[in-house]
Image 1 (tube, rainbow, N blue to C red):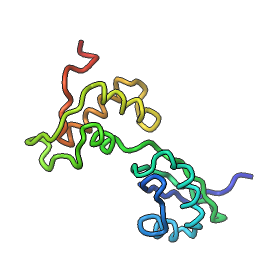
Image 2: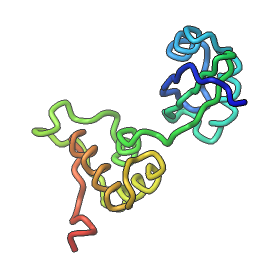
Image 3: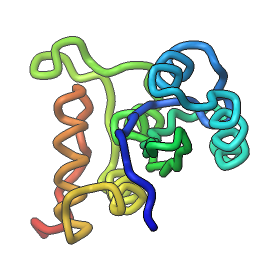
Length: 147
């Protein structure tokens, strides 16, 4: 018989660096989960992403066990890495802080495809380009579908 799900916990943790300190400890402790067990499993599964922010969705079951799914890094973080920036613009409509190419946008879109709500790479690229625009990052050149 399937276990009964009592809730979900969504966190963003740096890969390979989960520890019982906030935000992990309080979020899991309030649900009655074994915090150290989660930290060990998470760190083991994210050894290849050390230091990068990784979203994780933890499914909590009624018998205090859990499962978790690791998602791809958020698009804004990938855009900052691609543009070589520390943060986006405070006024994205007035001051632009960096540039990315359509090739970089396409690479980020292909990486994010499993987590996005779209069916084609073109629509994923439009989503990533919109995120870049709202961060004050310009996308150089002409969009591939406009040629």
